[in-house]
Picture 1 (cartoon, rainbow over the protein chains, first blue to last red):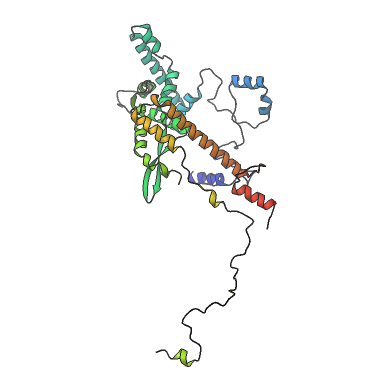
Picture 2 (picture 1 turned 90 degrees about the horizontal axis):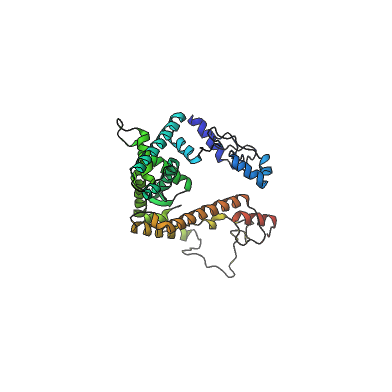
Length: 230
Length: 122
């Protein structure tokens, strides 16, 4: 398998000018000039109305993924989270875990809601678990990351700005790791993940603390910020 | 005492011979410019967003790493980085193509070489 991978990697390194006809796009089935599919009905309608659809008609388009639907309940970020959660390709299990933890979030919030005494307090509580999930991911995103840079035989941890994609991945991965960090015999994963989601959406908990620790480390190493890209 | 040089009757030079005027010119490298430029001078080690980063650190540490009071600083930092990455991607794209736009002042080495090739001066 490693041999096959390295074979493909050498192909990526080829300049596009040299073999313009055959360009391998990594391990992807579709070449790089294929556009992403527009699978949402609203987007298609919007394109039809604006008349831009004629541009897309003859464009080579990738096939939509199995999970990509125009359903109301489909959430691309939640689907991404499910994929990050998945181990050994057990998608059904991953989806189950996510659904159960969202249900647990709903239960936690409802419990809080019914314990409230006044309407003002009740209005503050968010009952939609998906909104809570989005808030949790947003609150867990770090602003910087540490990159090892070798200078004079010494590895320095250099603070570097982080891309949106990487920040989202780190936030989600920290959530998953926080969900795994529990008493194995007593607490189920979805219960712990639900707690972490609710905590992170309130800007507290393990994930937010981890993010703040990373920021602290970055500040401690801010003297090395000049070593970037060298 | 070294007798051989004396006895052989050759003149003895202990130092470099004085150059006679006019000194003849030796052309070691050809005396004309090359028809290409090398891209060595364009490499700059610019580290982006250092200023924004230090402002952000100052704000974060004064607020105990709470992000909500530092929204302005965070936004400016993110914007700086996004602008930088976008510009860099654009520049790489343009450099790869080597497209010449009329009236452009700062030319990349690739563009310069294209120009020099199409209008040879030497």
